[in-house]
Image (tube, rainbow, N blue to C red; front, side, top):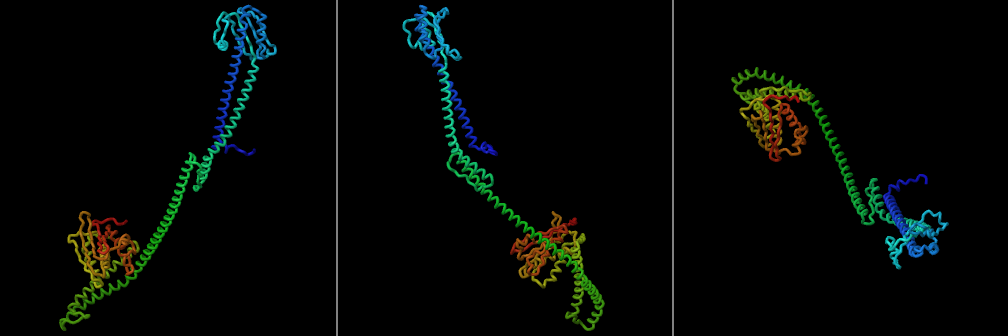
Length: 527
């Protein structure tokens, strides 16, 4: 048949097993048949040879007396009687000296190439010879040798018997092989059905169908293998489902993480934009505030000079007319108050000018120069004077506990004042109702070469979720009450610029302690 291929059959386990079994059966059948034929033919030949020798011995017993008397007629007669059998080809009776005394030869059998020859001795012996002696070809007869009998037999019947034996044997062998082959085909098909079912299921699973299950008919070796493969497929199916779920969870987690990162990036972008806007606004505000501050400073200078010039006249008036009231305050007290007011206005305008300069430096990215010899205790004193000016807005008690022997640091005096003011104002705002105690102190950490500023309050404390983002801009617990969320951000910026750092220790409901540590030796803060 065109296009037909035996490759699938050769690859089939059932076909290969059937081919091996039938080939081995055929070889064994041929071997056994050949052995049986060979053995049977040899038995037939041996039997015919034994019969021929028996006949020759029987003739030798019969011709003993005529041979001894050399009676040719009797010998010829006995030879002719023995040659009446159709298988006998020739008979020769000779004396001891080799003279041929009787000879019978059939001419029609002369062409037969394969003949059996039996030659026996004729001896004088007792009158009685047992049948066992006649049958035993190896036994030596008794008596004197008197002649020989030679009998030749053709093998036509042997060939016919051999041919029939071969035909019958190989015919039976062929029938036996066909029967065994047919039986083995059905047996092997029944046996290998489980293997075929097993391989079909495995092929489906290998194709990706892990839901396929192999039917189990019998709990033999293929059936047990099918059960194991089904369990393995079920395990792989569960593993694949778990992997798919894990993959989905991973993709979902990645999506959530990307969304969170996107939100954080957007928040940072918004914060950067806000800081940029604040920087621009701070620069604009610095420019706008600088003009009225300059006017106030000039007006204060004028008032101070006018007061100095008017003070001698007011003294004469007080001497001539007595103590009089000036602005609702007696002249003796108002004279000192006016001078202090002028000094306060001067210091305030100077501080505003410095803050504006710093603000412009922050917005433009400029850097303030640090000066050596800054007294931290004086920074605390100046910061307290500013905070106490706001004392009418709260009822907090501020206790200063400064160290008398404190080395100076390299820093910006007014920036450190701003740091302390921010920390004190935060502590005041952390007090419930503005009532409580704030302790500010200084100390020298000689082993570290640092000066430490400590601000401790007994306020509400800082929540943990706020504490993690405390130094970030726009993070505050008072945004709804007007807080900007920039105080600690600016404070940390200034302290870091001085080569120091901030530390917080807070317990919700018990208060907060803030420590500022500044190095004594100047450090490179360009980073």
